[in-house]
Image 1: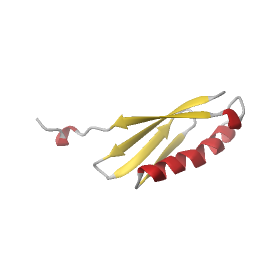
Image 2: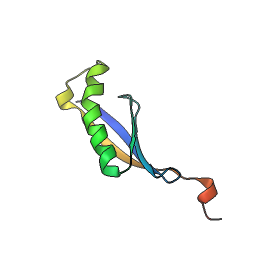
Image 3: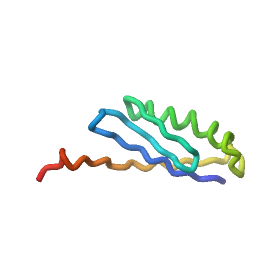
Length: 77
């Protein structure tokens, strides 16, 4: 089984959701959390195959981690 971590974040400065999975080479953004998740789920099998990673794409597992993007200028003192 191949396991990959996808970092999902919301960036207030541009009002966009994003996701990154360095191991698969995925970087995507969209207006909603749901759209970003759909993008990742669509891209992951293609990137797995395109990168000739060992194992079967059917056995691939994704872990999603929500990451906080903090902007110091908007943080209360």
